[in-house]
Amino acid sequence: MKRTGVTNLPLHGGAAPRWLFNRMVKLSGGICDAILLDFGPDEMLRRLSDPYWFQAFSCVLGFDWHSSGTTTTTCGALKIALDPQEHGIKVCGGKGRTSRKTLDEIEQTAEVFSLSTPDIEQLKYASRMSAKVDNSLIQDDYSLYHHCMVFDEKGDWTVIQQGMNDSYARRYQWLSEGVKSFVEEPHSGIASDDIKSDVLDMTARESYKTQEVSLDLILDGPEHLRQYFGKKNQTRLDDFTGSRSDDLTVRRVDELSLPPRHHIIDMDITEKGMKVLKEAYELQPSSYEELVSLRGMGPQKIRALALVSDLVYGTRPSWRDPVKYSFAHGGKDGFPYPVDRDTYDKSISTLKDAVESARLGEKDKQNAIKRLSQFISDE
Image (tube, rainbow, N blue to C red; front, side):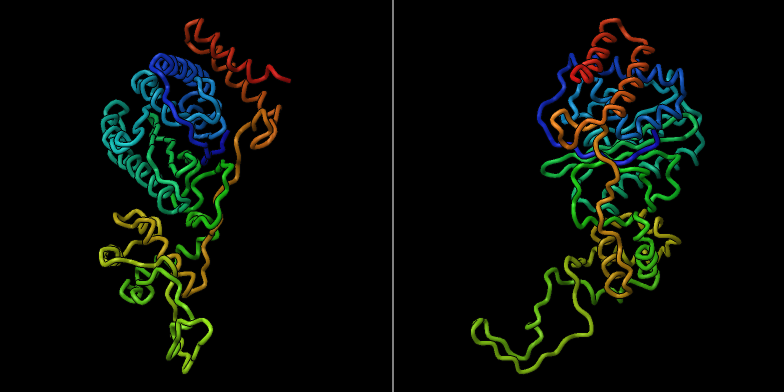
């Protein structure tokens, strides 16, 4: 139950009808009541941060494993169901514009939980950095559109956020007890069936040297980096000849003059981008995490520094998609892989116990148990 990370979900249209969402609020609240009563807030945060448990939880509330909304609607239901004064847990943020209210909602809960100013600032920092890491340090072509932070009275937290591309939604999950550094493999596990190629992962341990050199490049002053910026396309060899014919049958080379260095693909940095690098230099950040946390240090500049580091110093960063786990149970049609019955049965048993213990109406309990029973009806 300590795996956290990301889950890839194919996009399917539609929205949860009001009658279903109202029941989701009630059912999710009841299950959480049972977990909080038996295990406490720590275990509640751990389970919400686990992509396997969270996915199964969403399915019990009324979703298919591949339905659109398993993240956003489930988090929305939890936000209504969990009262910070009653449950000792606060759900902040959400989808789209609501995600931008996360920091304000954290501050509004300070008095309810009697959290100190440093604790509140740490929660706000965790919210900002988790979003920045998954948007900028893990460059997998998914744009974040959902950000939800759940925290308790001690200031422990989990983050559930989601990004989208043309075909999939990818869920990122964090747990505070597993985060030693925001820039060093902060996800203790990542689940995805869609493994992409050439994903720049600046949080990987293989990227540690690149992090160090990227910081040094800023601390030394960014002006000397200008020579590497400016061209997006790979230079052709005949660009350096004394004369050239565009006729492929006739090619005359008078002289070949190669420069000491070459431009790097996708390295165009605007004057505005150079200004951000200069401002970072003036602040003299003490660590790579501090550098990344600065306003304006987005994916383009992080990527540019990583590529210069590779080109000049040979500190190659990780280009592997940080995927370690797949879907929890597999599919009945064998896709993405056959169902693991033992794991499936354990998940059902855990959720069934939670439902049985929850403070729910008898009809809602019966419906939830029925959905769980249907998962194992076909042997």
